[in-house]
Length: 438
Image (cartoon, rainbow, N blue to C red):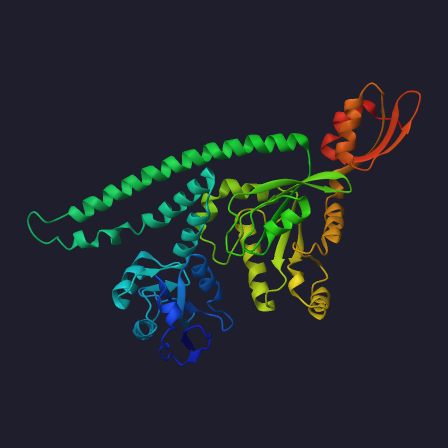
């Protein structure tokens, strides 16, 4: 089954018909993309690709889907469907073709020749968004590394005009020479970037060691991009992390102190995930994603306002990515955010359907108290109950106990302050000298 559509009304034409003309406001956009996909499932669509393109500043003027088990090895779409796509893209006044999968260099080259338009794939769109959203030095290094590794295999196409010179004396080889030169320069730059990122990784390790010495339980917010993780971080910690309604707004991890029952925890916001996240990005952001692997608890944030089918895809994509980065076995809580966008009946239905999840709103604050209770319960195994007798002269230890334990039961005696508290297991040895014999 095939389908195509164009224009802003969202209606779909079936049976491989050509797309209708785009509306006038869309025609004036600088980049106008016609989306194509070879999808296997009847429920799959191009909504995510279109959202990626909009985030990258590209107008979507139409789409065409071919239902097939595997993309064509040479042209991605079947030959007949490529011809239909060319006519539909022309009718929609597109000046760019966007593909929903990562194309091989051969597929990309063949499609451009057949369609007569520049072709980008899903990975290119994601890398472009990451490049525009990266602000820190580390983020820029990571994105540049991912772009170089992705483009390295595609450099032959950049010099195809020189390859045509071959065929006579004095004309053989200039294209190949330039290709090899560019590849060598790219490989050298990749090596340099990897060394610099290793240095960044070492710096992160030092920062992590400082946090580990503090022995505070660590929690990471993970989830699909634009699920509201940064808004939730701000609501729970009082932070002022930048928030915008766009994909991949947060690339650099942010860690803030979270207090529950007076006890401190460390809560980190992380880069969002997406379906078919390019492996180049997973590799490049290894140092950043390591924060996720090392957290004692993951809070999987899901958009409660998303349709059920889309929410299932989001959840699966996040779980798949967590497996890929080695965090698949980490304890986690499922949090359904943005419930402020649902009416009462929809919330109750969601509550019945997902009893394993906490319903919250980072905007209104609804459900945050319950989420805090769930976090405390999940991390209770990291705490140890102690009974101590602290001399009055050792006020510093008393202050530290109050800071770490939050709620402390204390009794003044002739020998000192008798304290009962729950403190992180890893810090119990620090106060062992004050322990009261049972």
